[in-house]
Amino acid sequence: MRRSEKEVTQPEMIAAIFAEATVCQLAFADQPAPYLVSLNYAYHDGSLYFHSAIEGRKIDRINAAQSVAFTVVRDLGIIEGGNGCNWTTRFQSVVGHGKIVLLDHLEDKRHALDIFMRHYSENNFTFPDSVINKTAVFRLDIDEMTAKQSKIDE
Image 1 (cartoon, rainbow, N blue to C red):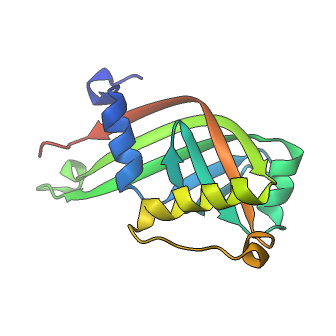
Image 2: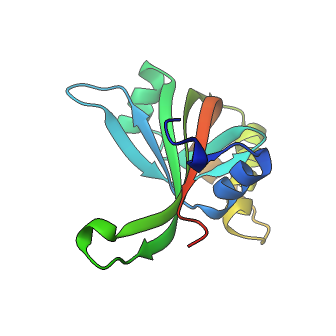
Image 3: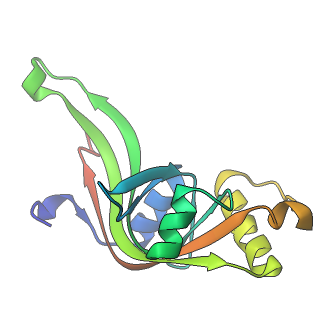
C-alpha cells in the first residue's frame, strides 16, 4: 500500500470494518467491460457470504469464472474544508480478491443464510426449504485482502 500510514493490519480492526459496513461490491471479468454489482453480505471465518436470484448475469459470471475482486467501504462522513481542495471523507475499507463457491446443499445454504442474517439482525429466522431452493447462496473465499482507513481521528 502506497500510503502505509493508512493501512489497517490488525485482524480485529479488519473484522470490525466488515461488521460495520453493509454493502459489498463484487467485480467480475466480463465483456465488453468488467461487471460490478453491489450486494448485502456477511463476513465469517475469512469468507464473505451472499445470496441472490438463481439466474441472471451475476450467476452466469460465477459459473463462467469464479475469481472475483471485492470492496467493502464503511462511510464515516465528510470533512468540510475552507475550499474545495480541502474537503475529504472519513472511511474504512477492505479490498481483495478470491474465489466464489456456489453452495448446493440445503443445510449449507441454511447455515450461510443464518450467518448472513446475523450480520444485519440479532433475531433468529427460519428459512423454508421451498424458499432456499429458489435462492442462490454463495461464499467468497478470500485469497488476499488489504484494509485502509482515512481521517478516522478528525
